[in-house]
Length: 192
Image 1 (cartoon, helix red, strand yellow):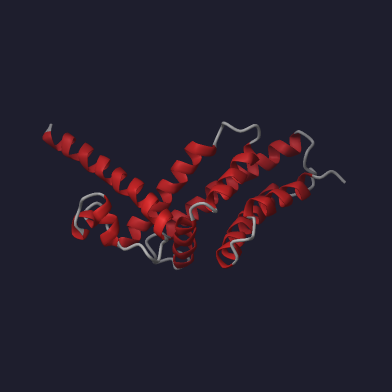
Image 2: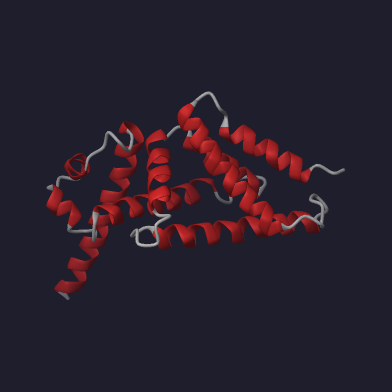
């Protein structure tokens, strides 16, 4: 029985670490946040914090996974149209530049098949393409998107546009990422 309680406490502490990390990195930026600062935010030593994760890389991967969970909970289902949730997440990203920096850095590093976050990003992109592809298919059935357009290619292009716009935005914060992606959606859904 003690083991179950200990496990539950470990899961709860891990969630506390991830939630605190979202706030610290969003506020301070990825480059200006140390593992020590993350540990301090939850009352642990660096070694104590890393006890909950296999490596620093896993910690950052799990921070990004937590960010996706928080964004999904905040922006899914409450809007008039599913695409608005996508726009809302992109809009929100401009309010958390440190998390955007973390995403850009870790996703680039994860291009190496040996990187601990490689599978996380492979699965994340697959899930996004599947969800967005279904959205496009639904819009095609509703007559809002040309049925000759390939839903899988469109979902890939939207993902590439969103990631590319994040990179541009990090270099020039005057770029309105959500507005650009919304314009791309307008072009795809525009009837000829």
